[in-house]
Amino acid sequence: MTTSPAGRGGTAAPARRETFSSRKLFILSAIGSAVGLGNIWRFPYIAYENGGGAFLIPYLVALLCAGIPLLFLDYSIGHRFRGSAPLAYRRLHRAAEPIGWWQVLICFVIAIYYAAIIAWAAMYTWFSLTKAWGDDAQGFFSNDFLHTADQAGLSFDFVSKVFFPMLAVWIVVIVIMVAGVNKGISRANAVFLPLLVVMFVVLVVQALFLDGAMVGLNAFFTPDWSALANPGVWAAAFGHIFFSLSVAFGIMVTYSSYLKRKTDLTGSGMVVAFANSGFELLAGIGVFAALGFMSVASGTAVDEVASGGIGLAFVAFPTIVSEAPFGAVLGVLFFGSLVFAGLTSLVSILEVIVAAFQDKLGWSRKGATLVVTIPIALISLILFPTTTGLQLLDTSDAFVNQFGILACALVAVIVISAGLGSLPRLQQHLNKSSTIKLGAGWRILVGGIVPVVLGYLLINEVQTKSTEQYSGYPAWFNGVFGWGMAGALIVGALLLSLIPWSEKSKLKDPEYEEFNAAAELEGDIDNNKKEVEA
Image 1 (cartoon, one colour):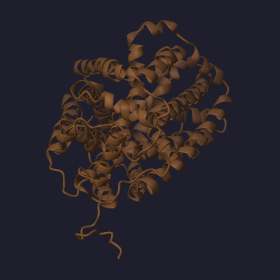
Image 2 (cartoon, one colour):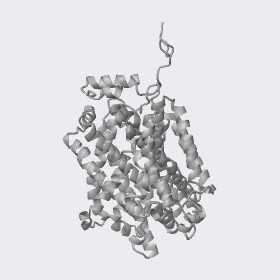
Image 3 (cartoon, rainbow, N blue to C red):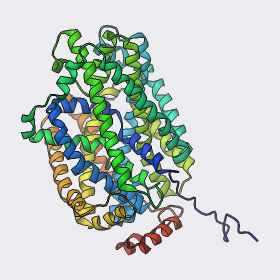
Image 4 (tube, rainbow, N blue to C red):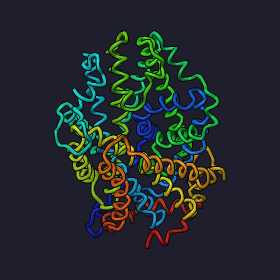
């Protein structure tokens, strides 16, 4: 007589945690998360502003001393404790659960505005075919396309050219998320990431043949060695690496929880880190080759046409497209790359939120996805395709994506290293099946160097935002959507951690118990087991 899947008591057995079907798909998904909009429009300008070719030295130091060690930390927590950010931190120690929810709420805020940028890029992919911006790219972007209000505030005057592309973005992303880890996230990254790389390589090759390309590359790579004596340059390198690798967002914790028990964690992390940095360098070459053309065509210096962020993407690059031979192709490749880079990153951001509620409340994959993503999409579609959407996006990004994440990361590193003393056992877990073994140096970097760097960056951010009225926006606007939002996330994290774990939750998942027992047999004994089970 066979036993029914429901078990003896008639209660359905808890669904097993999804896993990536292969290490390759995990690496593709992790690279897809790391390679985002910032790689294309942020790194080239930061490098140029902070010493050109000389910036590669602090960049490499930051990558090796902070980025990769923190990436390994996220991998170790997610893989060892088999859960979303809140569940993994809860299993690490009961008191650490709010850190996981803090990361979830940060991802929530980022998700609601990230879709807007993807929608802009999608529209500009189409605009590139007709060069719809005419002779005034700045005016077209602010006035004709976004219809940006003169004063920052909260408006519900919707802009149809932004609303409908955003709706399409959300439909695509929700379909991917509902399909799950293997059928959705893995397949999407297996398609989007290769397309992104191919399109961007073609873009770079085309940019290198533009008149003046060498002028731009000389400006980008010519080293200013004196910049190495400036602490601000080193801070910029560490700050950029920190955001570039998607560490301390909860993303890599969540993704690594879907890995099989015996996985080469450190080897995978090195591939992800250097693939991400390689793409950034490629972006720098492509962007500055194009800016060199713009400089020669306009008869101005490179420093007068170089810019970063939204200004580079939606003002400088359309100007290049208008003047360059085969400019329409250049524009389609550039903005299409932004769309694919944005989609893979948005999927990873949403997965942090979906997995957290799925784990805590015991919901099915489809149910958790719909209950979580549809309200996020509605909030996004109410706030950002409006005449004040640009100011809301700018403020949210500055205070939550930059200031908030630095604070969360600093707290997490201090709690894990000094508060709980968990680094030795996490190191032991990383070393079990990894090709690259970690020693005391990794613990020194994570527990000593990284907190100092994060503390320095956080103090700078607080001082800057406290002494200056950000972007000249009204004090009430920055107070509500800047400082208020950053503070509300902390309160929200504490409240969410107080909600009892459902009886159907993954907290006492038999699958984790099996994994935990196997880990103990291999010598990775959990010293805090009693507190976790309490």
